[in-house]
Image 1: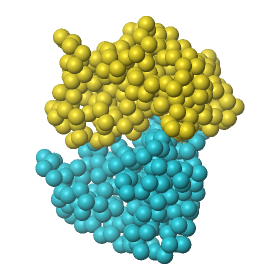
Image 2: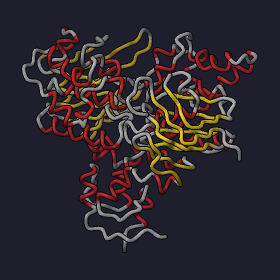
Image 3: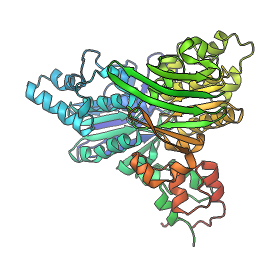
Image 4: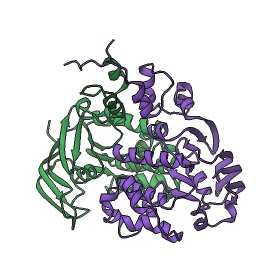
Length: 253
Length: 268
């Protein structure tokens, strides 16, 4: 299948930075994939999302070298800090979510339908008449994801989208990703929540110091789940089981 | 230092966010405040530091009635880390930022270097706070608050987005403060953090407290967790799956309880 985004030995430096935030990263994103990107703070996961979705250097400045091809017609990006993403122009959540499709010049009915669909998918339809700046952190995070979805992007990059969600809302958000991918969207997800990520990922990428250090099946790459860390600390030999069911299978009778 | 709320209410216009909360945190207790988005958790924490005034009821921290104090006075007793910690960083370097709070309080020898070391921030001390990733800035905000050596810590989602090394450092730092008798109230959705850092869990829903139990009890109560829309933390999932004795909830307890296990190699 044709890749929606291709990076070949792509390196990126922020303006004025002494060293690159991304160093020679190669990555392909195809329709239907949910690719989880993980790594310690400063590993470059957020930067990878910015570069892969076309927002860096176009919006944030900086220098990109190597090859980047973006075949997707539209890329959506949700920042780790949702309040930085509000338009500041809309007095209701409905208008906020409709802002993207409206700016594409779609007819009014299509704009409103796209907004309603996106709000429903994130279970925040009941917030439609609220003032965006008065939402709780978790409510705002879901509204911002809905605003990105309303644009029907072919690539959706999500930077720790459940950081402020309660567990039920986080589960609901993660559960929405496989169907979205099945409809042809490629999802690129950066998160330290490996336990949830392991449930939805089709592929996982681990980064460190701006480089991709591992890439492959989630069960192999996501060795940093809580369960895996407990198993490792208790002396279980590698590869470490990523969830409790896998752990039980590793206990000798 | 103890924290007491009696009949506390708070409204944003016509929307009542806190609807009659009675809660006592004894000195040195480590308490997690849980609940769905919009339950009133953040609003409640703001009432503890005079950033909001209750529309009814009374909040006291030690012998201070919070409604009669200004936020800067409250900072002498209560350290507060915002949900969006970027709001509380402004200096040109991480070290300056961490030193700012204790300087304002007139502290002679604040433990700035020690706290930076403790949270793994020492190598970043000279950087601008905005040149480190957003989750790391949350850790910087926590460092700033710890350097003020408050007797009460109120933390809104202190571990959101942290990697596991940072998270472990934050947990260890909070446990150390708890051991020194600091009262801690932490709003969190991260039940792994709750399992490791809290002994008591208070759950809010629709502006009210609906559960108040030892963490060990709530985290092993599948039915209560389901009702609250929560999933047990990995430590409890492992404890249950392996039938570990004594209901271990903290990572160290679970690892200790797994010590005797004989492992088999992974199937090829």
